[in-house]
Image (cartoon, rainbow, N blue to C red; front, side, top):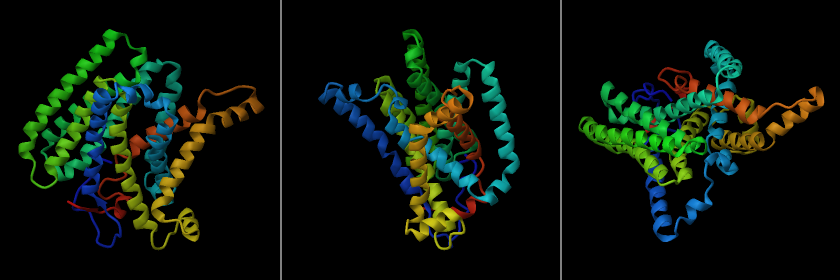
Length: 349
């Protein structure tokens, strides 16, 4: 979702379901819960939880099936599954596809993998935090300089936390320490900046949203510094993904709830499957199938036809393409005046 696109003026009383700001704010409860879990584990169970959890979320299949990839697939299904949306953004979709093929496909033959990974990591963090700050902007009503200082300090700290978590096995102790220190400095600056910006935020949900985004980053740094890497990624991942699904489900209910014109939703209606469950169920199912069987199925075909294998054609190639498209398209498809935004209204402000 675009940082500039979430506004309160665009709504319709004819829409059945709304995106609740109170619900979105409640998602941040995962932050104190993870910190509490850390303290209980540290002081009560001698780090048993930390030792049990995988050192990286990517090593845990269930995490990959539940977080990250499903909402990426859901986003692409929603966009590419509607001919009117594809028609509205056809040129942008074709252009971005060609760019991804050229830069990440052909470019991978010349650009070191570590460079491509860092670029992807930066884009991932920017996408995640821009969504959260973009939504909060509607209730915080910060001036542009304050909003962007909050956003970029959060993104800067988030990037170093992300790299510290996912590259820790390839970093020297000195490098890991430097990354932790830079993340700490940026997090401290974010806390100071939030104290200054708080004075410019109106009442209601503004101040809670402002601090929710700040504490999301600050607590991620703290948990990361204590080597609870899984929890450090879980917090922003859960908040981001469920926030995204709230938009997707709201869109589907408001567009297809009463008289679905899309064949998929017509089929779901005939089977008495609630419209709200169609996209989440399909995206989780496809994620499981792709993560579990995708690469092997592709290699079975390429071994049979060409006597060769393609390294992670699905889990890296296809899912990577969908992720990059998701990062790109989410920046404008929910902005005010877009065809998707016609089916979104807000409540609980």
